[in-house]
Image (cartoon, rainbow, N blue to C red):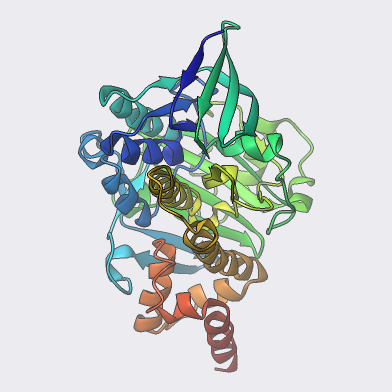
Length: 408
């Protein structure tokens, strides 16, 4: 059996793997992407946040992405009973992108991989990693494609961007307890032929059903819209029918959106993911780095998934290239420590959303404009800016603000 040689193998061709590959291609690195599925393929993570844009730009994708007319996202709207909280990314603390996109991921991810292929990147679709072995400073990766053909690749470094496939997490026994427990999600698409104009048909909106349960509405530029619910497992256990029947019953529990989608057929049978949060023991080791969902996934409430995926994919690519060039890289400080810092900030916001503290802050009738800008910067994904007190002292800042508004 012939053995192929590469410097870096990337497992997974989603946004994390594509951004890693896009950066490495610009550096003329010897790379190969192994992707288990054939694109286009359906996946979740349809709402981006502005921090993603920095990463897409550095990986060389902005020109091709701009051509495809995806729905622009300028902020986010949260609704609870009669109260509305809106965040405008142009009114945030600090510098950074003022907008991003809402995207059907099947189309979006294929735009990225088509661009990589046009740039000469070798992507092996429908190719599964069957085993990995690290010895004598290099990896031996065995693969099998959908035709049953087996291959062996040797490389110096693996970037695992396999997302929910979690290839190295499974192969190297890296799974760990999640940070957010017992939350599940169900979602589908509709073809919204009578979509309202303006914000009602363009803006991502989260409707709060209860402290721990919420509904999302994400409109796309192609006329389709994503609908989904997130909540504790106990809420989902109340529904005992088919996925379609359950989803229709769930829609009746909304207030703001109740009735709006009754006449639309589902584009596909609603898909349910149980216990959506994921975690690992560590995200780097000798000759490898885990990125995006292959390392950790918190919760979809603030659309942070693709931001962390692209942030970690780009950073892993940079550090791997430096290491292969003979430079000593402090992976704990420069990679794990950096990513962990951003995850800790978002973890605080997610956890305080589900305690209800952050919801009280969002729906306060007269929020401080300066504080709202600082929180908006976090929602935009700029969670490494220590000039922002709601990043630097995230837990203390939220606790103090909540205490203050409760005393009013």
